[in-house]
Amino acid sequence: MPDVDVTLDARFDGLERRELAGGLTLIVASNRRSRTLGLASLAALPAAHGLLLAPCRSIHTVTMRFALDLVWLDRDGRPLRLDENVAPRRMRSCLRARSVIETAAGDGERFRAAVVGG
Image (cartoon, rainbow, N blue to C red; front, side, top):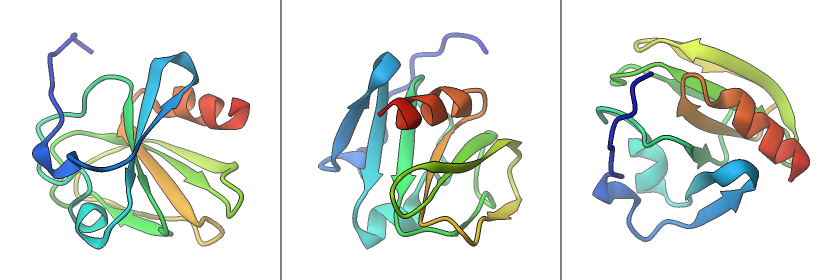
């Protein structure tokens, strides 16, 4: 993927950011508005950034403009499953999950490893 200078949308202003191993940044969608908007309609997500949606057992990519990797987490924040390269206009669920990390396609394994190493 080409190196693109992408800035975060203003919708993420004021949200908690967690620094993870490997230079990764996790943005926590901690309110109803941020969970509802998610990554919808963004042109791209900055490299090494992910969005944590909690609680969350299913997502849709109806208004997405890029593919996602999804790291599904259990109630203790441990990875359950990684769905890679989920195209726009799709739905995914993980009934055992309590939350999910959405990342740009190709970054999911890095986030999964960072959460495990935690």
